[in-house]
Length: 208
Ligand code: VGL
Ligand code: ZN
Image (cartoon, rainbow, N blue to C red; front, side):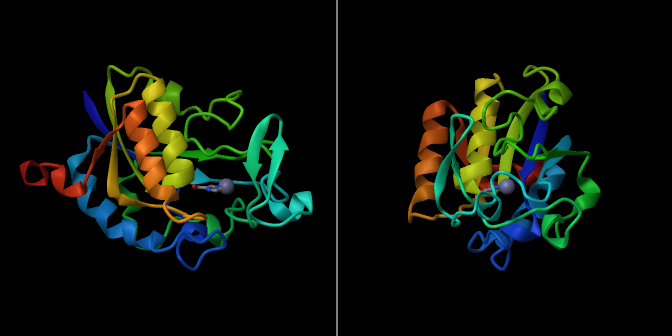
């Protein structure tokens, strides 16, 4: 069984200074760098939207934080973020990208958002991650990154639903927390769905 790290959306726009600021977002970087040597394989996702993406409030002429129906999904409206090829879409400085074996870009369809690293929000299209991982018997997944209450949560829920043994490393995740406690709620939901919540210190790093 390969131990596979899935780094979710550690991108400038999700840092504390970013367009879609995740408080303290950049603080996951040193934790992730420290645990990388423990893994056989490292995958990173990038939120990678075209301009005028359907999840942008500016596109729908409404306010960030509003919720609209998008093809049956209750879609939160976000500030413009992670536009393909922009500085905001780059990995946060300091993340050790040398150790990344494979990158998955998501949210590339202008009409539909994709919180999960596996499927779009309507579960219609795969990002290619499930096919890339081929079989849940080959990989166990360790999920980290941004944001706990959105992309980490949906990625982890799709991972367990796809049959992967799925760990979520809590101290290597941060939430948007539009409502205080959204991150805690998300951890609870992931745990109830079968994800195993651990801390980076639980990994036997000294055995690497
Ligand atoms: C995310 C909101 C919109 C995330 C991405 O990475 O958690 N959240 N796009
Ligand atoms: Zn996005």
